[in-house]
Amino acid sequence: MKQTDLVVTPTCVRFMGRKFPHTVGRGGITSRKAEGDGATPRGTHRIVGMLYRPDRMAKPADWAVPIRNGDLWSDDPAHEDYNLMVRRPCLHSHETLRRADPMYDLVIITDWNWPYPVKGRGSAIFIHQWRRSGYPTAGCVAFRRDHLAWIAAKIRLNTRLVIA
Image (tube, rainbow, N blue to C red):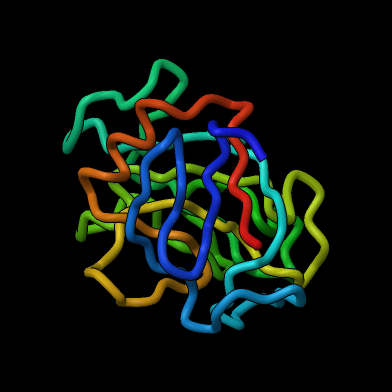
């Protein structure tokens, strides 16, 4: 592992010589991820993108992409756009990226089951803001807002999320 890896441990995430409190999925950490299980998949995941709400924050990195009205993420294993960003109107199951709450104001995208998704293996594993300390996610890794902003400013496309 490298200092530039985000290393998830049971008590913290280590990154660039610092330790950050975090939350993971309500289903814990698993080696057998499935759509809807609420688990965070074990493994080494590349960072492949960053999205942000330009109406709520400054651009966190030069390669970050704004979240627009109508941006969604498909989580329907039966649909051809499974585990891809899609736009409204979208008649199949999806997550809204431009949320009323601040949870997705900043989203770091991993390569979990992407870009060639296996149906039912689970859709996006994001790194995003937590609801509150200790409150689990639907499978993502989440941080306090200021910690997430610090991490986002320092990661690069060669940064990996390592979940042991």
